[in-house]
Length: 288
Length: 254
Image (cartoon, rainbow over all chains, first blue to last red; front, side, top):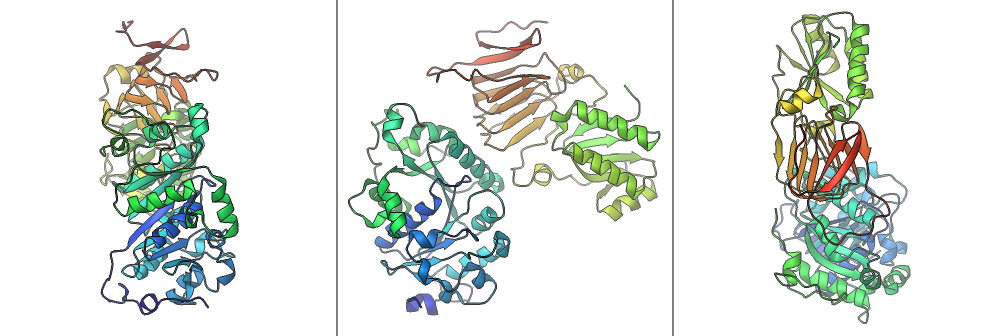
């Protein structure tokens, strides 16, 4: 059985009336469309935040099609999963799997054999409430789509990261997701542009970040270039964020630092765009 | 016009008054109305005003199914007859006495789960007995929205619609009158949806996925190269064709 640190296992959990040690941020990663890199983003942000000394729990809500465990190389350590937890067959600390490489990164895996309906939004809120106070970040990996699994993933979130690739289909589905997230009032959403191909942008064969932001009109959290190291890392179960020599890795680490409130300049992936109000203000437009 | 059915738009949704006569011809007539103006009615939330008619639960189910065929939701029944009230209650509809629904009817959230509460805002009574032009000419109060429309969002209004903000690809605006977008129009716009061919669509950047005025549909050239310069344009109907031209102080034809 995987190791659980004493503080997480004995944990001053909010639900247990314990004192809250840290302010936990529950962030759901969504995109609408599948295959744009939600799970990759969750795995790499988990690693990057973990390397910055934060305690992070990543939750896979893609019940029936789990794969976050594989990207972290933890698939052979799963004993209990999210559905076992919400159905009361195990305790939280039994379901959490500690990462092989980072002591402060934990995975709460999805069930492989059940369906999305095995978990409700209220279950997700309860699970995340149990984690509040004990870790710095909970990253919830949403399944593709905008139906049941999406509603589960969104329910417990304090903030959202939406992931888009530079394609019309991806941008439009993120736009749809943003509309849904904002339907109950202002939502704290920021954007990760994934798999950017600077060569295609320069040849005007792909959307530029500015074009994507023009449509989506939210804060930009980071741009991750399309790089084969990302795929290789996913395949090996060692996210690229462990690899210090890679631009994509640097992009993920920058995103992690921006999440922590640091002002980090964007990587010079493209020719700098001339802007009236300076480079950074392009991505920090006032809310409407 | 065939006497029986009358349809009005209110702020809360559509009110369909059944009038007198047998159910069969009434249902046929209602079906024809809904079919003719399906773009406008689609997604609408409906109150049936039964007046003094005695309706059985079967009658109500039939109406509900007819509305559902046209993607409308029967939410509420307004009646003075006790049998009708009982029928409505047994089926779980809201019951509104008298002519107006007393409870504010659910807006778009109820009619289309998952979408923000923007849509069926029908600000001005729009009786369908009146011709479409009459509604537009009456200068039905415009709906002004200061926001960005995102993919999947719909604005539907019996008068004219003004959006201060961008209208993203995948969203739609359906208006009885004109559509004005102070921003980029990238979604689908349907002006004059009740049949008014004198309606226009204008935008600072008019690049919709599809444009409709009354029953005429057009879409941009697919081979069009990416335009670097944008300028305000207006779309209108001439000789049953939608013309798009650069805005340069348009002269309105009477």
